[in-house]
Length: 545
Image (cartoon, rainbow, N blue to C red):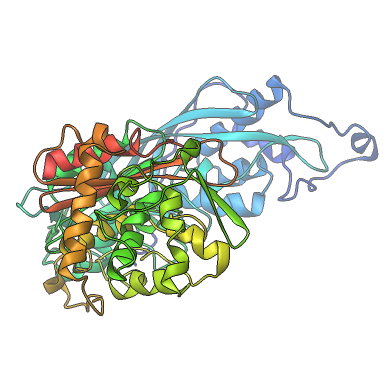
């Protein structure tokens, strides 16, 4: 991934933190990877301690580890962990490969057996230097056989973003940096748009060499999996970044970033229905695994957009035709009910059932399809689900597996084995808006001439008209009315609450459109779709609609 060669340790780069036990004394205190090493006499063996480490042991062990690490003595620091063999090469590479010196570690008050700390250091390479600072934490445990208090080894002890098998490196990058811009030429950075960090790293890996830039000097994390992008930590010398055009919109992206931060776990994506262009992607928290693009969850009643398209196309119901909505309904020995067991009066229309998210109205019509595979078929043939999308970054295309009986019925209301992420649901809404699937993209197809996925057919115009009318009703007076009240333009919506095993509260799903922009969001354990995910979608639609 990178071409920078290893260079000898810069002499005198590490500085011993003042105070505490000298790091040179630690070799007699060590333990091995399984907590069973070290030389002990018979009398020592009989005095092996058990139970959680004491506060004094936690302080002494962590301080000893910090002092040895800061002094550049990887061997001494590794001896104070419960995995000497795993810890030593990582600690050694901190100075040898990453050229990090002048290390000062400031521990905070221990919380139980966990010790938080901040690291301040300097990266020096070929006359270039930059400060490095970050926070992490370690845990002190009891050695399994020696009974000594030891640092529970994990790569995150050295850096919070360091994973198993990954290495810290400093040198000349083999892939030039990129300057990613939005559709209007606005520069997109991970500092201003944190959710774009993993995406920008991927775009650099894929398009950096062909974007017209030149290599710089950087400190990065090189993953063990070569297919994953490097994670750039510090740029010592920029070189010349290459320019990469994206389909993103800076205004919509900023709104998406703000919206998801209001919840502990939330994701949102916005897509332009007429082209498939992705306008915004945001997650909170931000992780290397992009939940918005790669997640797999039951989407709840937002999938009724697809189910309604199926029922309308088969002529089993019309938007203004009557549709029964009882409190409960049985399908092949499996019982289904509406939220709080509500029902709608006789003579209510299918639009009313859609707008009020009546589960039983959909379940009652399943028998009439005479095909358990009808939903998986329309998912692929019309909505492009599972067609191996080539967006420009790694994405998951969603899944509606073929099922029978009660499991097939659960799929009609977005439960069971249906798996989606907010990119998939934004795309489904976009397809319903125009009637034609346009594969979402985050960089233009012209950038690499990749083959985009195409669905085998479009929806009939009458079905598109009815779907849009039903979604408008949901936004005007149905379950999405409160969330969509602030959104202007031609607007529609669908709410969803996905029940997930082990959770006391449902996941909140919401998808909607305003003019030529569709967006979908999920808030983990957010409850009803209109309450949590709805405002997230509304904020993005307001910014980009």
